[in-house]
Amino acid sequence: MSASDPSPFPLVGLQAVSNARKEWVALAFEFPSDTVDALQASLVLLNYPEVFAALAPLDCIVAVAEPLRLEAGHLEGLPAHRLILRVPAGAVDEPAAQKKCAALAEQGYRIMFDGVAAKATQSGARALMYDCATTLPPVLALVAQPGPHLARGVDTEQRFDECADAGFAWFMGDFARCPAQAASTGDGTSRKRLLALLGMLARDADSRELETLLKQDPALSYQLLKVVNSAAFALSTPIHSFGQAINVLGRRQLQRWLQLLLYARQQDDANANPLLPLAAVRAAQMEALCKEQGGDRDAQDLAFVTGVFSLLDVLLGMPMSEIVAALNLDLDVMAALLERGGPLGQMLLLVEQPSGATLAAAGIAPESYWQGQLQAYHWAIQVSRNL
Picture 1 (cartoon, rainbow, N blue to C red):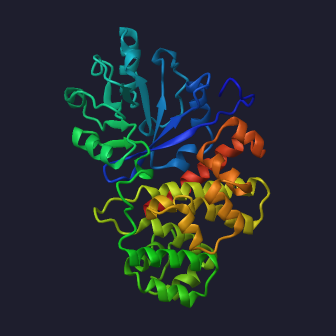
Picture 2 (cartoon, rainbow, N blue to C red):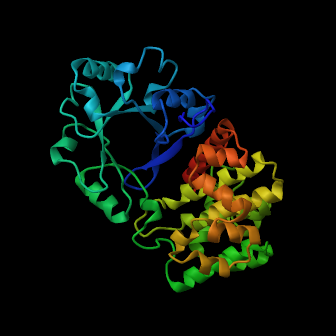
Picture 3 (cartoon, rainbow, N blue to C red):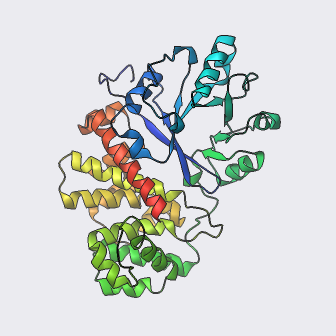
């Protein structure tokens, strides 16, 4: 809860934490800088109905600036095996704080020190979080605890590799939005095929046209059949053709899955594409916001498309203006993608950089935003596990 926000319900940013294969393993709860009591804000969110079910199986990393403030009842009822308590290294200088952290560790809560702490072992810490934006920690700091250690401030693919070489197993930062190269584009022919497919989806092309183009891209066809036959649909009979897939999914759902499948194309290094869950979160959250504002089904579809297409420039390594020029998009979607203009653009900005002021301007209550946020992350987690 921030000093300027009259609402008692906190606004939080969920920061994804990835493993070495770039799969999500945890979510860090990050609050605006003017939040008065981050611990209390975290507890409000963690005690929200079904929050751990929505975010399963990911761990939740919450900041505990002053361990001695934690009372016996604060964490009561919360699943210890899903919580990681992030404690500043400087907060355990005193024996009482060390003893408190050690007691929490004995109860099953994992302690992760933010920074290098001399008394880490005595405090029950098993992992280290370190700001690796400019420097790496001493080698011995990582060896002292079993981990997994978390590198934050990892904003490029190069820094990701450097942190992995240094011994980190978890990573947090903007590396997904700053790839060394557009990982999914392949050669020029593949890029043109992708743009053609996107254009067909945008203009609601005939199923036969889509099938013809998909047959030219075996990897994408394979991914589509894989998701249709996944646990997400629990079909009794396997699907073997694109035509069957259309009948099972319906055109609306087919378009959505194909839009996301573009981010799931086979990677040379077999790692997950970190853009996939980000695109899924944006799309689902845009749809939820549109619904909250009274948008009908068609409006919600446009909001979804805006969210999922908002990272295409990163995916394809092309200016958004060139991508939009090749697609037959709704004018409102174009304005949102190119200049964050119009109602969809304002909604996209809200998803990208939420604040109490922008929520109020959009007429969205903080609790409603949190509900949509939970739904979006739940869906993105499921999508990532099925693609």
